[in-house]
Image 1: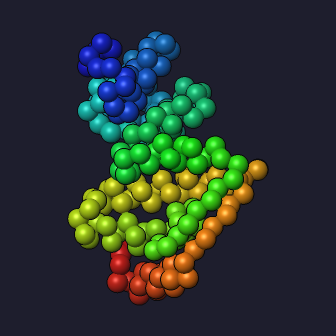
Image 2: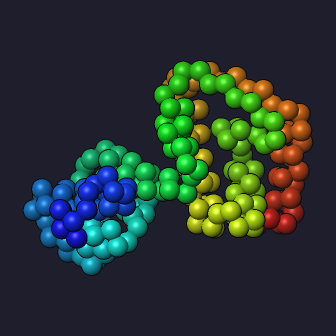
Length: 186
């Protein structure tokens, strides 16, 4: 794929590859040289640049270190992994991250920002058993939830107001018990 073969907006996967190529060329590095710096082969770099291989979190983080770009490649990777999310949810999460006050209601399940890793895993794996998502998508959702929850650990976290139906809390305990008994695998 040349720089003109695909529009960057065609997919986050393509955007990642094009940005990797642009950054490599700006440094006048070969694919082999970049591969060595990233800890991969030149062929792997070629696959990434042509969007034939999916970028991983590790590759994105290493690319940010190698190119000293802050979190540019990590953010591109995050956009790629958001494909496992429900339509419109990435935009919701972006808006949520900018809020100073958040209000939520939980009638059936505990809202995402309050979910423990075990609870989120139980929900995701239940969706896999139903055939609604793949195991890879379940893992991506769990990882993305952990990223979303980081906003609660920032210097000035948003003020949260939550109304939960009492059953949510009981079901949360039941889900975690099921997980601890091994009925649902993590």
